[in-house]
Image 1 (cartoon, rainbow, N blue to C red):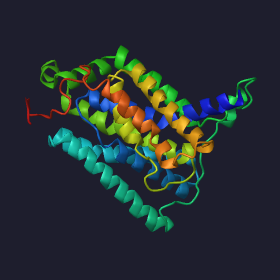
Image 2: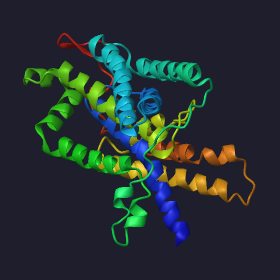
Image 3: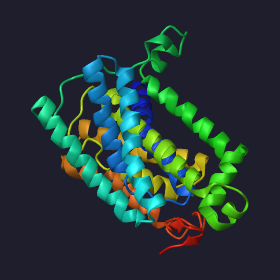
Image 4: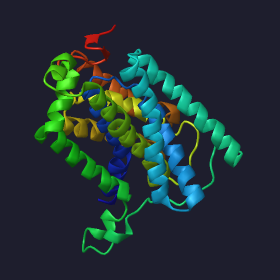
Length: 308
């Protein structure tokens, strides 16, 4: 029973960054903008959170800095993709390299190493510890996990029950028709990319650095941004299904962690670490031909016409 509880805690903790980043990407791609730059936005969020917590000695200031830095990186992608009609995949991949390089440079400059100093973190929720029976279990999670649950519920409501959600879907399917109907296509796309996507992916990075750990190190995202991209595709851009896919990845991530701790077969740790990514690739193969994708995804919309 103790082993099962430990595994469940690990599963939930490890699902959060992919889940947050996937929901950020969902908004972005639903509006018709492909985002392969989630990895870079997450790195920026992780470093921004540590930097904010380091200088303010307050982890919540760190979270805010992580979110804002994620939004800043996303704004570059938005400017290139929405305003100038650039090639979205190249823009996203370029931002991954840019963000990783900038974070590594400033980490080395400020801390003198590729590993930052330890900063104030929010790895547990002591406020819930006094709840009878469930308190000891609930307190083990970061407050950011509970914030993630709120984000998921709110995002489902926005996409399924509000005019804003309807407009986002319309812009991603047929921006010309959406504009004819009076929807401000460019403003909505900028909002989805810069604010919704950048903010949530930045929050995912902040969770990694001060929600799970208390420091920043180079390449700490370890491909989670790309897993988020896969999760959106596998989930068919549907909130509930995206949650299921994120938990699927969390399961294999928790499994590889347990296998490394109890590696009786002597398998190389590097091979065990590949488990979540191999599971994702295999699962993606069965959803590669899905027709659920937004019809205008990756298609720039400039001056009332498509520009390829």
